Image (tube, rainbow, N blue to C red):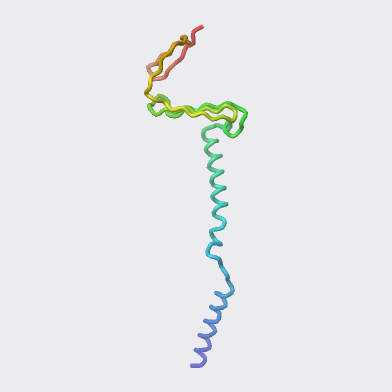
Length: 119
């Protein structure tokens, strides 16, 4: 009987030594998640730029115009000139005023619109 008690005490003391040897902070495993999230965000941004073939969005040298939802009521135009970013949304409001005719637009059977400038 004393021998069984001794093995049991040895097991308990080994367990206590294991627990005492580790001073773990509960947030130590979470500390690097911010770094992983930042790397993931940058990779996602680069993948989106590569997917839409718009590396001009990363440089400030070219002027870029993006047309979202063309021909639909929620159409948007995003234009970047240098460092200035402009965002236009289509409305049902009509405009009027004086001006000059610049050309003619034709809608093809395929639904495409062709603009022909006047000379």
